Image 1: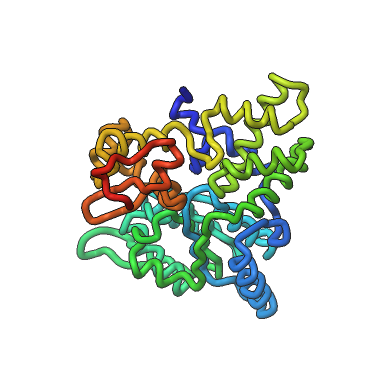
Image 2: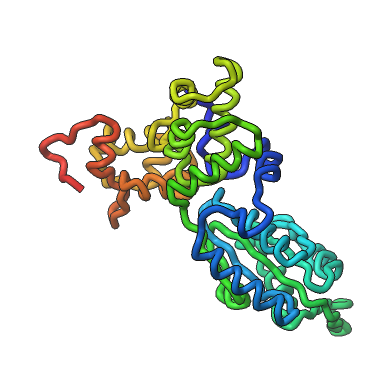
Length: 340
């Protein structure tokens, strides 16, 4: 059984993804595949700002992990010819950390804040005037003698990325001029991404294996590129280096990733609901305890894709496995169970 730490279809960035992501990352909007509506809006948005010779408004990108929020931030920077500084919400612990970053920005620079929903409230309050008035308020001294010093900042752009937009405070959300939701990719776009990546990595990839990888990629580019790498490794070790359909399927059998992109963890969750709780409804805490997974991990990592496939339903009483899930696992409902 695959080690859960090495879960190949996890959408979060793994340590060995960093180099691969950088190598395969599109540089321009024209190279970015998928998310057509966002790209069309961005073209107009960026071109208008360039014609006015103004820095672009602050941008908020949200959606599940692995869909290209960081990539899109760098694409915006490249299109504008701007310097992109990268940080994250958890990395900015003190007001001095934020002050150091902001005072080192130049006019037109972009500050990309990943996991922006994890900024603490103190940092957020300092960020408000910086985003709205391009000013930094610094408190000097303590007690009755304390005074506020306002420093002017160059006009810069903040691009925030989050997987949990609901955790952003309303005042922070309101200061972003443009908000874009990245959704899961269409299968044909995932195939194009895989073929583009194969070309960059100099991998000879016929159409049928590309289709096979795309089907299992959970409509997520990061997963698609990771699976492409795993299939390449398998074919180099077990075969002659050429990727064909048979070797591709053998590789996925070894990785325990089925034709819909479900791995053993996904199947375990469905089997627990069906076999142990009669198909549900069952609460998240019971699912987490039965699968030895964290509640947040079940809700944020596994559940969205199972719901997207129509294998899982949320009800007021808990999670319920659908008839489609039964069919996929080759299980039958008993006569007493209510069809979903």
